[in-house]
Length: 112
Length: 113
Image (cartoon, rainbow over all chains, first blue to last red):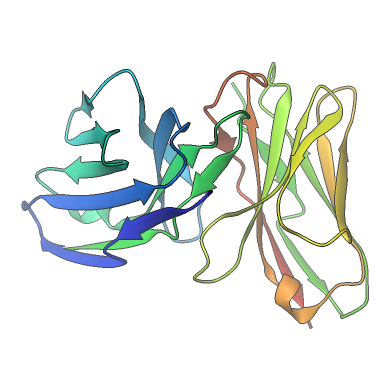
């Protein structure tokens, strides 16, 4: 299957708090999991990615964790700031080719 | 290094017309992907080209087609436009068919009246 699902669809957090977005995927052959941030009217920008040979990756305030057994991966944003407000998309590679299947996106609102 | 570029930025067409959208990948990238981003529906995969060949196609009707040129730029053609084709069309590129990381262009906003 090619399904990638994101939860929750909308997330509001107070500035300084943490935000967590979870994605589940169905293709057991998926081995690459990127996260994109899309601000209003702008292109999706790659913010972090993880491959199936690692369980966690960090880059400053953002981190991604992967649980291959459960087929889910999560984006963690710590010390949220107003500029973190955006739509975040997760994606999973589809086994056997270079395609990515995307989730429907998650609107994150950071309240000052 | 220049990023992925797309043209035009905005386009207004009427039902039944045809449209061509253009994409130039990052220099050195050979793979180009096309996505449709309709409101509330996320990114739907349309087409993938690599080294001038169509490698994969999403679940879209045949009136969506495209091609990739020897310089790796690409065109997306949509024939017999329908109202539901109104969307942001995004192009992405990656270094090659064995590399997953995709970098997006700014998109073309298509409105069908």
